[in-house]
Amino acid sequence: MTLDRVKKGQSVKILSISDGLMRIQAIRFGFAEGAVINCEEVIPAGPIVIRRCGQQVALGRQMAGKINVAIN
Image (cartoon, rainbow, N blue to C red; front, side):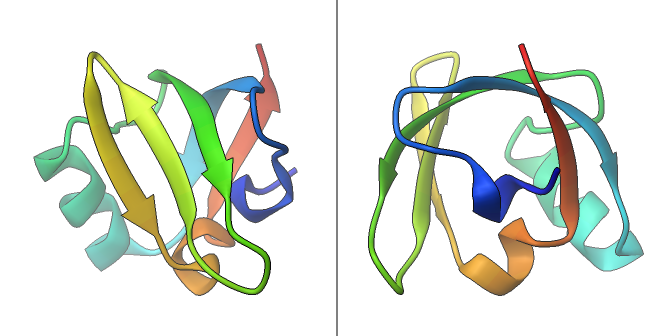
């Protein structure tokens, strides 16, 4: 499952990030493979807001579609 399919309130673990550049950007924000993140908000046809360690980040759906996750 990819991050763009996650529902509000779900906690997921990042399994892999398919795009190399996206992986580098995610690591800068503290979201690497193995990290557990919470979905704070899903804006219809808009970004997905995730939280980890008190930090909130909004990801576009295209970017979220490149992040493989598993429900935690």
